[in-house]
Length: 205
Image (tube, rainbow, N blue to C red; front, side):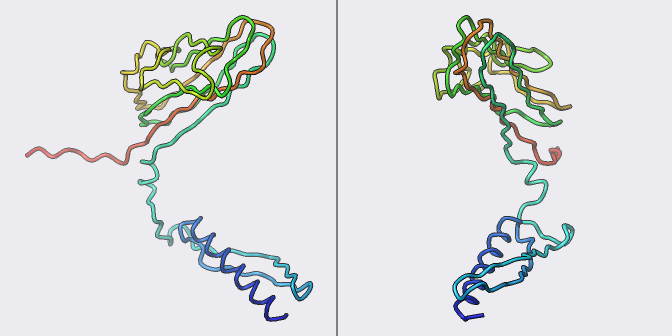
């Protein structure tokens, strides 16, 4: 193999190994490849193999406890179609999670010729988070309603009830349309929550 081809392959493998290590918390320890020369300036790498340490042997930069304390955001997309109906989207909340915010984003307002109304809640109140929101008008395109910000349309929970789910739960949004036409609406429900680290007890002096 010509020297310039060897150098190109060497650089390529080094770059792949660097990216792989970064992506896997340095769990990748080796990389090998079968190199075939097609021409002096054309090199094909096949049988690329990564060798990883076992999970037990890897000293991860982040422990699982740290990962569990990260903020998690889940979303559900809603797309308006013709003919009346109910669009339902749900986000499952794991046990012990504290919901930081629930937001409703209109990428494009709904255009149903009669009505398009959104509600959002949980098992305690199906419209406790958002109630009777006219998504034909609110929020305006590319804007979002926020539960914790107490935006217009907040339900009976009033943006003040802590959304803590000790045993887990489900946050569900429903858009109900009544007219026969309208296909422009595009919306997304965002639910942002965190799972706290293992708790420690306070010490009484």
